[in-house]
Image (cartoon, rainbow, N blue to C red; front, side):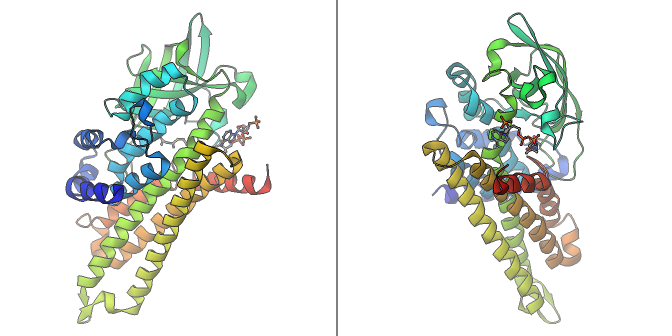
Length: 377
Ligand code: CAA
């Protein structure tokens, strides 16, 4: 039922806006409002904190269906899930009661601020500093590539409270956009997911109340990793949706495009491409939802090790994002010269697919996580 409802919403309200969002590179506030009104931004948040409590499979389904027509629009939901997840995982009751309901309801937007210029894949080497001064922490440093940077109201920021302890000195803080000393720097000009702002964040002696520390000092790295364990399948779902959208478009095109006196779908060369694309999409779907149900069940009932959770999460993102890149590239090929133009959606889908192999950990990092889990280290 959820899939049917979201697909209809996506086709009626999101698809007609997709090309313009990409072209104008402007955040679609109207769609954020629409998703908020439909309760889609709080799908991963339990009902007691203002969400609809659909869990990870529900979030994946919503993101998949929206990504099928617009990756940028689906990122509104995926980025909210990423930003609020550290609060859901590590927040105390007071923090959850204060921050989760407005985020679940979509009145406020959030962001996850981990990456720095010198700390991308090596997330443990962040340098943003949080010094304890009386009843507050003072943050100094820079973050980069932050999705929702500049439009978010609430940022979960990772900073070191004890540089000498390496990644065990990292702590997580909730920072509100109007705290003094916080500002937004350069906005990136990107290949894809245009319309979703990605920006630099600057902290110049930014005071953060001590009650905004998530968990304990030094818990930050584990909070970040546990968050990504629960959000990487959402990137997998986004990749799956992009791939499904490209496959659907290529199928329709192949049935109508006539060359050599017949529809190109009647040629075995095209049929084999479509068959391979559809098989990959279905395999990605099985893995994404296997991971989503496995992780949701582990979170609710236990019974799985941390390594197993990480492995499924990384496998889902790795496989689905590679499928998205392959299938969108093939979709452009099926459309030939037309596929290469902006008059057809598959070139946008191909550009959008690329980021799913990069963000929330590059696919090389996913392989490292999977291998470590297999090898037991
Ligand atoms: N859950 C809980 N704890 C975990 C964990 C997990 N999934 N993974 C590791 N840890 C713990 C380890 O147990 C270890 O603690 P102990 O020593 O107490 O056992 C500690 O964290 C350090 O772990 P590692 O030794 O494995 O750390 P590492 O330095 O080798 O790095 C890594 C691991 C997997 C490479 C990690 O740095 C990583 O995931 N890097 C990619 C970063 C990333 O995904 N960035 C994306 C940013 S968000 C984004 O892209 C969105 C956007 O806005 C664009």
